[in-house]
Length: 129
Figure 1 (cartoon, helix red, strand yellow):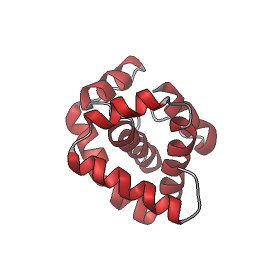
Figure 2 (cartoon, one colour):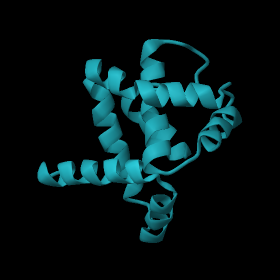
Figure 3 (cartoon, helix red, strand yellow):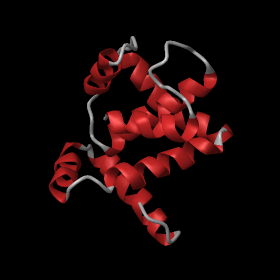
């Protein structure tokens, strides 16, 4: 999970573990939270523990709020969807097929459907997932 934070910091210069409410930091946390939950299949509590282990206070309600607001944030900041795509391309390329199958088993039917639709869109755009 730390590779997600490292990649975000390397590309955007934003430290998502920083104790701040600056809009830019909140938006990139949203990208990380959505990716970890929906793509990597991490539970809300896994994400909360990850933040806490890195010195950032957090709770599950914060993660839910962050994930729900990603769509709004990405409407106004196009860099967020680019970052999400970069995470999908970079981080998942190092995940084994058995890891992906394990992640897929933990997704809800709706989340799995959204992931498949997202992948189909990327394939149709001739870009890598």
